[in-house]
Length: 164
Image 1 (spheres, rainbow, N blue to C red):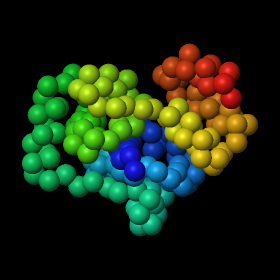
Image 2 (cartoon, rainbow, N blue to C red):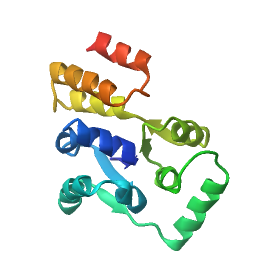
Image 3 (cartoon, helix red, strand yellow):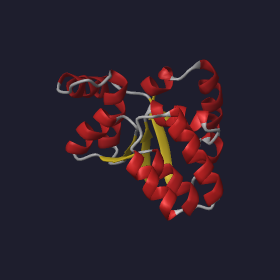
Image 4 (spheres, rainbow, N blue to C red):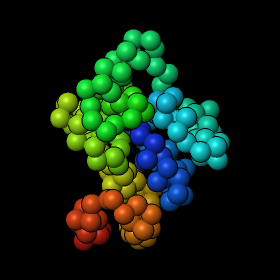
């Protein structure tokens, strides 16, 4: 089972798309986030996410003192990343997992460090492969996502739409 460490922007996008429940039904992925990312979420988002923590669909990683030292080391050697960003980078690397983020700076810097990085389009792919959503539904939600989040790569969207 692959460990996937979720950044806040992924959880927030899934929340806004009303895909959070179906996301946590994915099989074959051990979904995690950090306590620092969890604290970035709004109160209503936390209330929903807690349900998935309670039913063990999501694990919130609590950083040890050694973890904090290592996260601060990453933070001090990066440019433009938050402590929360560095926490998901560190734990993805530590757990040999996939870092799931939509943050371009985090993606670039953690990839250069050897961390496998995926974005929200990977989630759409996994939901389709798992037959948790239909192609029509995926197209609808992808179009909705691009209205919510203008920073997403337009070429990747076009490729997915052509494929679907």
